Image: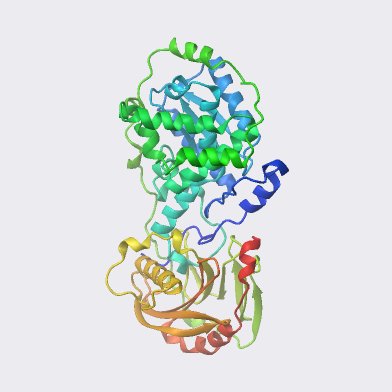
Length: 504
Ligand SMILES: [Zn+2]
């Protein structure tokens, strides 16, 4: 592997949600629990793109019920919920699948499928709306692409030596890297904490739409109780939506916080719809339908992941760093740092990171990826989004076991896993960066891009929100000494404004 990363908005938290919540909370709903979505590499528009492509694949395999009365009924409930749900303005759409399992699922961007089995099992419209609101909450909170982002970082992650450039990679490339479009579990299978969030936002949505969220709790409870008797029918739902602890109590509590719904009349006649469904040909289970469909979708190619190495740059051409420094300020105001004036900063899309290099400091590879061979990268790292603990073995680079030590170890582990040519040379644990403790590690190895010995120095410093700010300096080893002087001055110019993390 070379030190590259195809998508580079990277390693950050999404800061948008707070704004949405504040706007959508009407005065009588101030009691509601605020739910904050996790970090996301994708934009809401990319959620829609992913949902659309996946829907196209799925609908080739799953039987869709076209009956206008059924479509209409579900569509009207969905519209009522869609008008009040928080989050990006997704084009929610609802289709009914002729499947017997008691299940519903939602793709990123708002493409929702409600199984016939679910509609037939509901005893009130509010119960049906409850499951729909829960699914829509996963969409609104962008849980699917949050998970895909985590999976992507775990896999491609720490290729940050490619620099934190703006989006130079298509949605498709990233999605292929985490398993592809269609019924991809990365987008559809949620964690328990995501479940709890979906219950809460689902309950809030139901109240605002005039449905009683206790009906959602009751329906989940009924499903849980019956799943012992007829596991097959519920397997899909509970394997993708693991029930959080005290689910019913949590939903009821949220309903109380909201002061309960102002009930509206149902949009239609559930029993009539159920009778119409009863007249249709028998519904297969999801499993049966999928077996009839094409082969499983994970045989697709992963795209061109070969690391076509571009021409080795003539590193002799890179000018030494100027002793004059200029100021860079991150767009979100979290940090400021100076850099040699003959280098050029490229801010990352996330508003946090930046890659600053001299002419010739970045090599474009045949694969379209980029690799920093000379220069610096500053970014933030969220250890909770990293799954690199799995590969953990033996000695850790840093001995201290506090938040800074653990997060820094996790960061370095990822870096060396994905840039395996780099070997740890030494560490230092007594560094101060802008008044706070920081750690440093020096790594070396023969770069597969330049075919020359390369030195990489990493600095990590804690931010208030359990994340790290990291600084990485890269240079060919034989030129590293010319970087030493500016490096000291660059480091001492760093100012971090933790409070700005909350303003995003
Ligand atoms: Zn769920």
